[in-house]
Image 1 (cartoon, chains in turn orange, brown):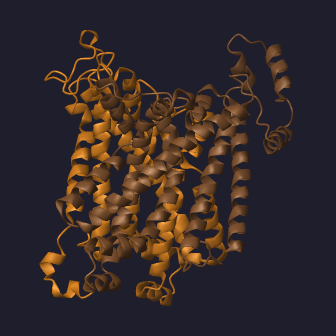
Image 2 (image 1 turned 90 degrees about the horizontal axis):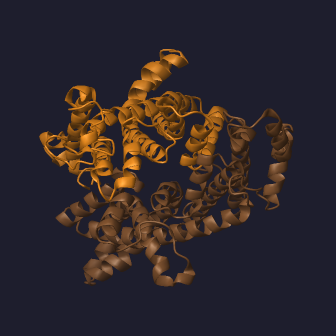
Length: 284
Length: 318
């Protein structure tokens, strides 16, 4: 297995994994759609068309209309902003908490490491959905609060990856060199370790974004997340449930959009992992 | 091993105690006054005070917690504020319903997930392999409840084959009873399939690449026997671990799936209590789900150690 890389021509080894290409294309298109959502959407997301309630998909309404005659396609487009905002901000919260904790745990070792990692283990021991539900029930719902709650749940995973990468890097020559130069701890942490953690962390980050988008959808489906009349995907699926027999497109369209989003991000993450771990190449 | 098991069991108790504190304190951090919530808009300060006294809400938090905790330890979970009945019987019935659902889903995931993983490994790189990868990916790409909805649309609304919601009782006969289970079980299975099948596939690939499999082939054993006897047996372990871990995911997924199918389990009970702020039911349901989650995780780890004696649980637990 190990010699394989030596025999292969260089050009072939450098080729990007298909999953990474496909995933990045999907994510790029999504980002453009999210940024230009207001321009592309044919109607305002909350405009009623009373005469066109429950219209099936047509040229006028690409994905049909809902129980108030609102254009489902426009709502799905605008909803992408909510979903991705939630996914990204929850992950940012998780990174903001998890990366420093993981760095310190891996760098300091000893009692710091034990304390940090054991308390994060404790956090992982609770069923994730229950913690978020509790937080959302006792305080009035808001998008950012959902994001923070999900971000806290992501912290242990991000901290674990950060810590293990830090432990690996600690024996690297450039860290020894920095130490020999007499650099301070914070310099080594921020300028030497941190930049080298990102590549590996990207895979975990893609998983966390997916986790946040899906959990956010479950929460708003259960009516504990974003509140109506927001065009949130989970909420749209939930309110379309009542009309699934006469107007299935109300629920199906946002789910389809979510599926494509999650697929794109997961593919990109899988591709990244493949790119970084050459042993995986050829297995898929 | 025994020491490790005891240590882990201790951790489970610690988690449950912390969780009970979290539940208790968070329900007391509710934005609105509990008594005012129960009595509604037209209550007066006096009636609220009277109800608070009756529920013991006017006592210090410390005493309220101890009273609740000792009640829980004695099996007394209090009365539901909304349903006006003791919580315990409601909780046990919901737990039994959820256990049936989760158990059936686990059996399905094991059978289907393992088979798909083995088939994908044997046909590695072929279109069969890709088709299985895409199929299992689909289960991951959207939340469980979405496929539940799609299944309802196909099997209940369009073809009227299966009931879309509720649960039957055993007295209605096995057919009627299990017909209510089919769609929720398929939904849960589909959402868990990817983990199991992909892991089985990769550990099968590893096993198929070993010398003992090569030796078995060289001896001229039929391919079926090589795959099932020699490769699968050795590839099974990681798959079993991930199956056990999936049980934890299942508990999360069950909340949404039970809501979609209006299945009277623990998840639906929890959502019901959360929406109506029925504190005793909420506390009991959350505690019960946490306990189940911790115990299944513990069982998974112990099972792993038992199956694979190479893993020695000692100093560092990771």
